[in-house]
Amino acid sequence: MTSTSSSGPGPRFGIWALVHGSRAALQDPDEPYDASWRRNRALVLEAERLGFDSVLVAQHTVNPHDGESAQLEAWTAAAALAALTSRIEIIAAIKPYLYHPAVLAKMALGIEEISGGRFAINLVNAWNRPELERAGIPFAEHDARYAYGREWIEVVESLLRGERTRFAGEHFRLDDYRLSPAGLHRARPRIYVGGESEPARALVADRGDTWFINGQPLADVQALIADLRRRERPAGWAPLQFGLSAFVVARETDEEARTEHARLLALAALDAPLRAANKPNIDPKAVMFQTAQKSPRVGSNGGTAAELVGSYDSVARRIEAFHAAGIELFMLQFQPFEAEMRRFADHVLPRVAGAAARSLEARADAALA
Image (cartoon, rainbow, N blue to C red; front, top):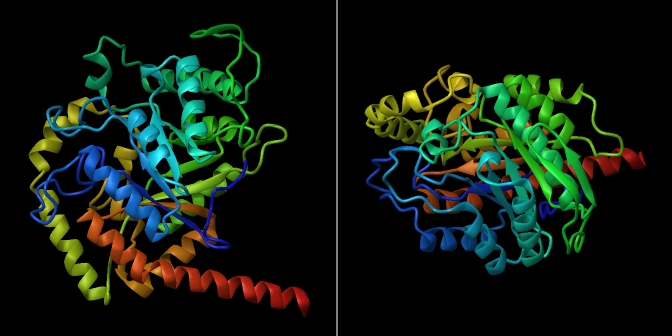
């Protein structure tokens, strides 16, 4: 697959769109709740201008925090962002039970055309029970959801390539189905896959281009990458790439960053009653929530567990270590989002770019020696 990276030899950086407001503490006076299209449009346009490479638009039909607050719809927003931007990669999450694969593939090809080849899908297999059940959609057992998702993505992947697709499985039957136009800019849009259970790992090895890993310590990430690198890939497919979700708290000094992290942890503690009320809605087999119990953290999808908390130099070195371990894309969260995103662009991105340039120069010198 063709990379959309503009970051040269170093890693790529993306942001989470604020489709359901703040990514960490919901009662932060510095970031009032706002999941509007207006805010997200401005956020993504600024992220593109600042040099970020990707935006991830999470998919929820109803707000996962309380079911009442505003929630931006992922796929209509992704289409609009595709028309407004010129460089940034737009990744839209998808829960297979919500869309027939033929319909979803057609939508994806449409956004791929609008974006000029900058679109990608992020396959997730759902953890929020009421979102499906209250719509009359059965919420299957964990491994059964992944079996469904495997069939679903096999159909979608073929249709994205513009192939005449014949498929007879447990859940889907297609007879000589083909979508056009396809392949206008590349073979197909990129496929990201989330989840860390054994069915998720098997699925991404077989059907994904990039595995999204939830934020966690470097040693744990290294073990996850090593496991996936040992697994067989489809013939002719490129090696699997890896992305990492992480919440960033960066300041001039490590002490200042720790102080801000403590502030966010205290604010996040105010959301404990809401989390407790939501606990019955969460599939206990979802590894993301099992991992979240290991240590205090702020942010979703691992948040600050990736330890991108510290001085600008410390955060840059931490990113370099993850990149050396195999992380190609960092999908970042901040709070308050816009101000901290600018801080990261001003102070951390140049440090990482400088380190990548020095590494490239050193490799070139070694090749000439």
